[in-house]
Image (cartoon, rainbow over all chains, first blue to last red; front, side, top):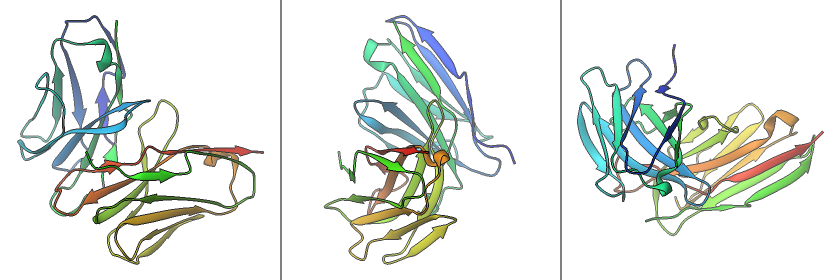
Length: 113
Length: 112
């Protein structure tokens, strides 16, 4: 059974640009969550999607957005990139509902220069 | 936002020793999860706990969901070099659906 797949693994962008990251969940999982990981702040929750609907959102500015498609694949977008957006972005999938066992992908390492 | 206090921040031990780490909070959690993360990789789920007082093992790992629902611990017995990594606790707060709150992590180093 394939795990959570995130693409790309690495990205380098310049300030002001925008970026789109992709996440394919484990087959059968309908919930996808996104997290930002930095050395200073640790793992911070961005948002969670289930059946194409955002159910929960963390405390990030509106430059961070996401969506989920009918096949449960998800994308997150960051517009007007800032240096502080450099981080490892992790996607996690779960069955959803009451099951919170979340399985993570390898992450996308975003560097903003 | 809500914080989980995870301790210790780091541990340096000899191969074969037992290890214990814990997470505490002032809030009640419905679920506790323990993850291990290797450099450059995503966290890997080790153990999931759903009931207060629950004690669950996964090989040399044992974790417990605190009776008060405000804490959890993870024990690793007879450590080996491949146990090296960062261990995270994560919890789902009561009333906070579909969102996990993570501790800051415990960096474990095992000296062969």
